Image (cartoon, rainbow, N blue to C red):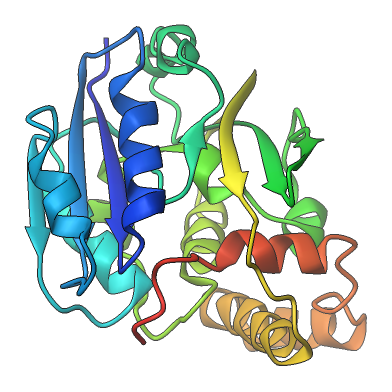
Length: 256
């Protein structure tokens, strides 16, 4: 059975961090590594971390943003697969890892599932597609907290690009999916409940998301193909723009 590492990053979100930790340690399946990366929080986050011996490794130090913090977690992880649950996010129920763990032995590059978006006490269920294609990635994305990522991919294709502020995970997915022999498998399970409270979908953030999604493709495809997609307005037609923007912002991680 493949070993799993769960990585949680946090910055000044002790309440959300407590919620995430409780969700993880309440799983019926406990054969995983739990890593917490804190960005030198000035609230009680470190005190929360110190309460839990189930956390295998943690650090609290200044970082250079979301993806720098996640890269620190990647470098500390020893699992075959990595799941990123940021502070405030919780697993959909106590049996998620029990249900998913047998599937991870299949050796796919990515295993991905469904997501629940909780905002203003209203929960929306979002179902991932059974198969992926370029059109899907142009219009939507993998939902980062619902993806089990093969750790080897970070060694082969590199870590998250820290020049991105909110779409570094999207760029990594594009970087990998455009390569040969990358495999994916849909898991028909709700993996994560994403805390959407307090998310602001302002025009400035939407514009940044669009710019970074375009940049992700430009870095990973030829100029000819990029120009063709640009002419087709492929980067700005997303039906899920505001939802993707919500997922790519992390509430407690704003020190960049």
